[in-house]
Length: 64
Image 1 (tube, rainbow, N blue to C red):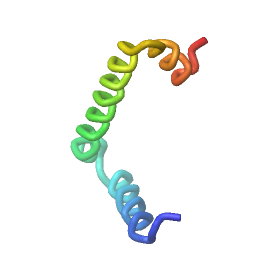
Image 2 (image 1 turned 45 degrees about the vertical axis):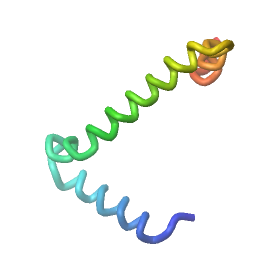
Image 3 (image 1 turned 90 degrees about the vertical axis):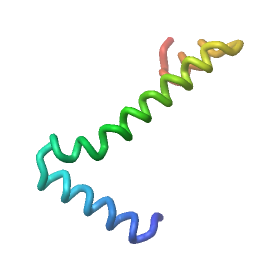
């Protein structure tokens, strides 16, 4: 189980999201989400170039 400070941080963030308009809090989380999407796309592009990579991507994405 995570420590208490982690739980407190999650609770503070939830309260912030609930009490502030989306236009405010999206500035905080938007760049993080964008970075995660970029990293995922980069991973898939690199994986697609290796032998058997396309098959692995299909399994990861559960594409038959």
